[in-house]
Amino acid sequence: MRINISRKNINDSFVAKIQELSGQNLLACYQCGKCSAGCPAVSDMDLLPNQIIRYAQLGLKDELLHSKSIWVCASCMTCNVRCPRGIKIAEVIEAIRQILLRKRADHLPLEDLSPEVKCQVPPIALISSFRKFTS
Image 1 (cartoon, rainbow, N blue to C red):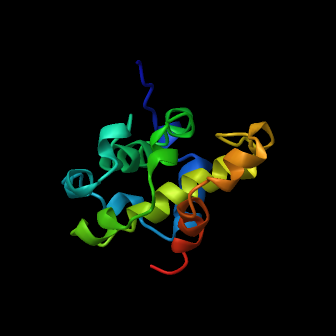
Image 2: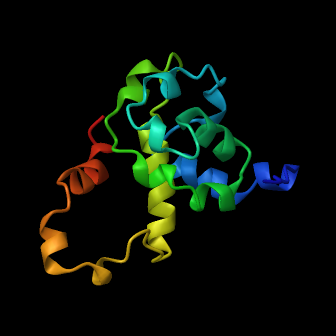
């Protein structure tokens, strides 16, 4: 995968929107990797939590919005607790999800799910959307 990094990406409104929605300073992260080391879902992610932060710092919008990691994250807050800089990484991931959902581009179209499958959706799907306001 070829990634184009430029000053235009870094100063993009996408980066500002992530910071606004999450309430986090992305530039505080110095890439220690403790968030990724403690993440219980990391084996199913295409981008590790610290990589998500780095991509966000660099304004790599398309790569983030097409990552399956933002949907794999269960907002367990392990990354938040482990961060030595106090960055709430789960909130950053939730902000990225919100940006995509506000475009009405769902990862999984609910209308395609049968009523039986909808009844089996884990409660964490709803709970994780509220956690950013309580941590």
